[in-house]
Image (cartoon, rainbow, N blue to C red):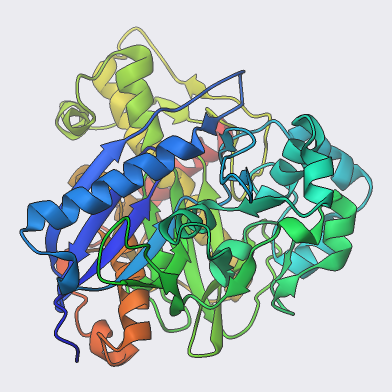
Length: 490
């Protein structure tokens, strides 16, 4: 093994940019984080300033190294994980974005997606990409930018524009514009990448009117893509791992065998189940996606995305003002013994899997004179669990297998009430690992495997440790009664 001691993971998320230094045991040495602005030009539209994303990411990268007391020479390599589907188009010559990034949550292309469905394109797109037609994915966002930004089509046709999801944008900037790549996991979320043939799909590019010249080269999730420019950090550090955030969390949770599943509780909730080397086509409105490609082997996964998970607690804090800090939610919810008959369907940006209703809006049902804020907060916490349960049941139906264990991570899993209720409703074990930063850890593992920092998947699988296991304690009839009420509310 080389003399380097650390892998630096860049975790570029929806609300913040982070850098985390991991040692050889997968333990965290240093973390640096910076939030950036959320831009809402119209209802249902969500944008980010791509320059601000890069600036905050560069800042935390340098800060993380500096605060660790190490110098750049101790870093073996860099792994990148990113908010997926968020779309940036920039000018190859100037390196400047032509417009704000359009975020995965953005719904502006929903009506165009309806047109594609009406034109009978759903089966074609699902067969090739594993995805449902939805404004969530990058393809219709690229089309929107080319159609609506003045002069964009002409520049694209002249080969002067580059499209990327956030990983591509970061690599481009880290390498001073020398490298324009993405990995298979991110490419599989664009709605224009063929997950069976492992290439950009000409028929879909033509359908969405996207010139191939804008696209990045698609590479595996674990290989050296390029080196960080000396103007950013010295030492010619390789960038050697890339995976979209959910796939990276699946890898960080070491769900490397068929049937293993994880749920990340962040802004949204994202469930993934490893389906091995075959594409399992969902008949229950889930997505088939590429998990990763390592050493020439491509692993696939089934995924269900819940659009509003932890964001429902943020909304109670920022929108309604009934919480001072999101972390207070557990203690307040425990002031009441149950939800008092209150059900909260948090369709604040539509409903994701398995409903895929872009036009659904949030609803709170069962409010009486006796309802207080603790009931509302508890109903919000429970709503996260019900949505996850809906996706797990769809996964079990698609694979014909019962889930033995759900590994969990993300910001909200410090909430024991949430995880206990999740185990009760799912009727299965919920396992919280000792390291909750599994998204960044997955990117670190992918980077370190490519450079020999870790010798094999077997070596890193041994690093997964259990913090706490939640077993189902609720009476089965009671759990069923709860989920029936939830189904009615939906």
